[in-house]
Image (cartoon, rainbow, N blue to C red; front, side, top):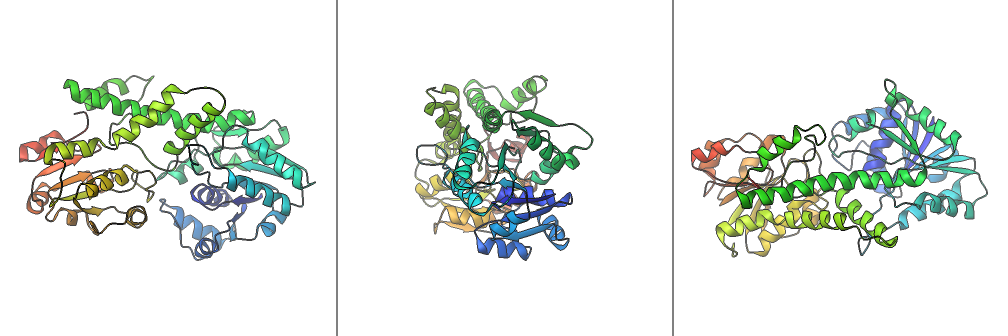
Length: 432
């Protein structure tokens, strides 16, 4: 099949590459000429395991074409995916300006009957607005479908090639059959298609992310209660996770969630609820608890050292919002580092992939970036673990003892065993 992906950000690039991997001819279109030129050279704008190799390989096979020319792409395609970003607007809503601009551009360039598939996360009713814009500006017959993505950063290629489910929101049988054929190679062993109406498909993406965010905030609140009562959230997690109705995923306490999806989508769903006359009490608290949780480590640090952190240096392990990605959007590290600097502290930071992106978020002479995890320890008064990259999981206690000014660790993800206290370390964790 020949198809066009409009928007070569995280979702568009991964999706387009995986479609190309299955032998389709895929045009990836973006208005960012620098990004397109870099992609043609095999320079990938994001870190995602295995993505670079697949992009280079499929370009060499002419299955994957990067271009700024939308008309060229549409002339050779009859399936058009919209994978444009939907940033948060002022007030917590969803900014759909880019989506609607693309709809108008499709209308201006489309010449044959096509299926328009929205992959972007959009509020309920957006697909019908896209159809309306195209119909107002073009006489070409189009069909619409909602096909939300469920990619986890750091595991996106595997999620795309081996999906848990493929949701198709459409009332048009022909469109459903086209998408089933396109996705067939991804689900040859199992029927993972879930067919529903367009609005329900749009809502499903928001509800999925809101549910996962709710689990995280709930466990973080439970961790804070455990800390007040003397219980251990790690033991509690094992106790409830063994219940098949609950399971172990997304019930790890920590210093808050971040990323491009959970924060934005929770706020977007809150905004949609309010616009439709409903006050979403639980959702509002999910967001509020998460923002407060980003301050938990700061509270522990100031309880230990006082509110004036001048003349103190803190080593930071992990800046990305989760392991296996270079994404720092809404990451707890932004809040934690900002608060440390605000109180006069100096910071030495290391992350395997996210340093360059973090530099764009916070510009300060009080931050030093290093190339090795142990280099952050030199003359540091404490180590702060924010992101649980695998390379941080096993500690060389001798190295920490030699380099740290004080043997103090603030563990924001509860990954270190209590036994290190027997080696003379102070270990501050969340809920245990």
